[in-house]
Image 1 (tube, one colour):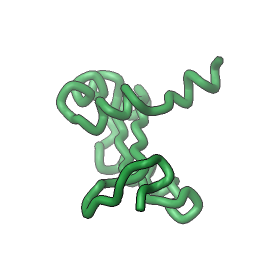
Image 2 (cartoon, rainbow, N blue to C red):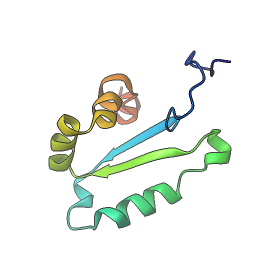
Image 3 (cartoon, rainbow, N blue to C red):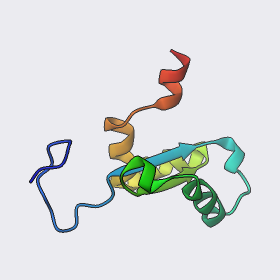
Image 4 (cartoon, one colour):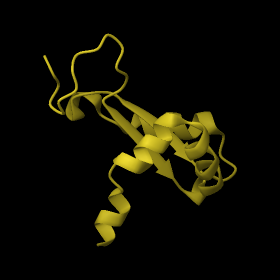
Length: 87
């Protein structure tokens, strides 16, 4: 049975949601603390699935989008919520 996005069932498909947060406010904050704080705000029951949360400074994001496939795919195929809010 396919999921609501048409993806066929897979044994280890990965998270349904990938959240990438980019902010200069993360400068100087330990990475694990960023991810813990942001991840604790995600309500998996309310959203219907857990999320894979990534938190980067702008410079870190520039590096990670070339080295991490999940971040690159989120940038290419995901929703830019800030851009949509400002439109």
